[in-house]
View 1: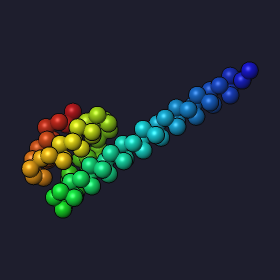
View 2 (view 1 turned 180 degrees about the vertical axis):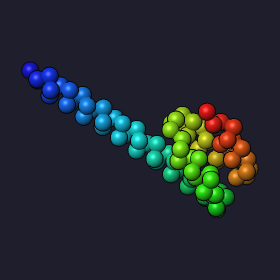
View 3 (view 1 turned 90 degrees about the horizontal axis):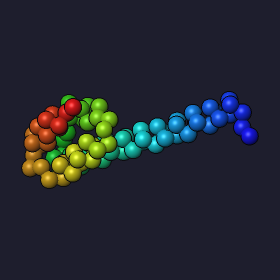
Length: 86
């Protein structure tokens, strides 16, 4: 039977791994969103990439990725990015 200290350590380790995975997923989503915008519109202003990098809601990021594929212009995407800001 593990000691109390071992139990706390294991729980902390598991939580740290989960947080690391979540952060990695967010970083990948940020990169994918910027990549889509760069592919479609060639140049993405720093103000847009900064705002994207500040996003921490995976669902919102996924919605924006889908929107980035179908919007007609970068200006339209910027409006969506601002209007969906919480």
